[in-house]
Length: 316
Image 1 (cartoon, rainbow, N blue to C red):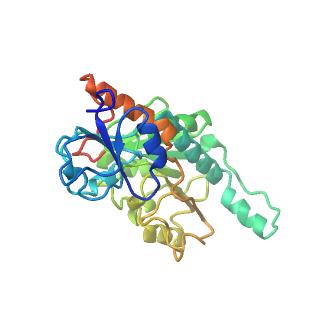
Image 2 (tube, rainbow, N blue to C red):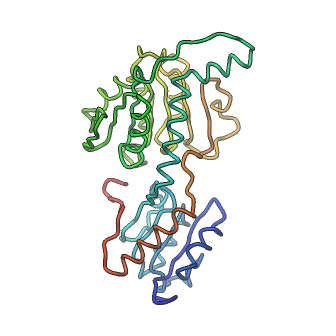
Image 3 (tube, rainbow, N blue to C red):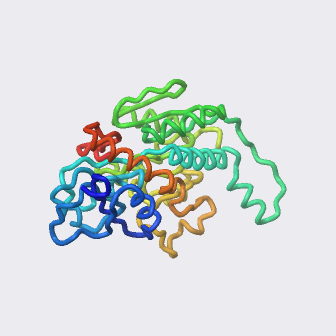
């Protein structure tokens, strides 16, 4: 304990500059970027994104781990994570960003945005059928906080919304499905599939040719559309390209990829029915996320329970 008796934080991130996180967290607690030696007993909390493998195992008095992003699969990629609570980040601005992205992409598919952009490129003036929102079924795979927030936004626009999750989650106005038995009925009733699943051993590669082929093929859009704003390893990109080529999939909006950044030689970049964004659907903003983390640490030190704790068995 230090800095007015508050637990010390290890900030361990790779892939970006942690300076802003360091500045915000260190306003209330002492923050370090590396442990002090092979076994550092002074660290109480770790705030991480793709931490260096093995670094958390060097902290014998670690009490909790906080993920900078909405997902936690990056934490468990390290097979030496101590048996302490792992906390998912939850903040209103993350839900807002995801709602904006999902709504944007759903509307673009519904209103024939990709087709009209192709027409613009060839100077074609031709109005295409644009079905009303209430004729289109949007299916959301992954019906946690982000999925329910997206469903609420889409319902307000008049879309019919289906939701699928591992376990049952009811929501007013939404047709909900769950478990393996509910997956095919859910897909058969879906025109635009929105994937917001966590990445676990069970969900890895779930968006494959078989799954895509079970989407409603005779809907009002002239074919089903895919939106993946969850995790890149949920999808098999070769299968998405195959489904596009064989007419099982009309269009795709992809924010995440099996390997990031997306390789320059990937055919997804230039496919005229694929919309690519660089993992930008819901960026983790430290200005909004650092405060809830610090509040959780304060509450924990008052002997209160942590919230948004990951179920390790489920992987999220």
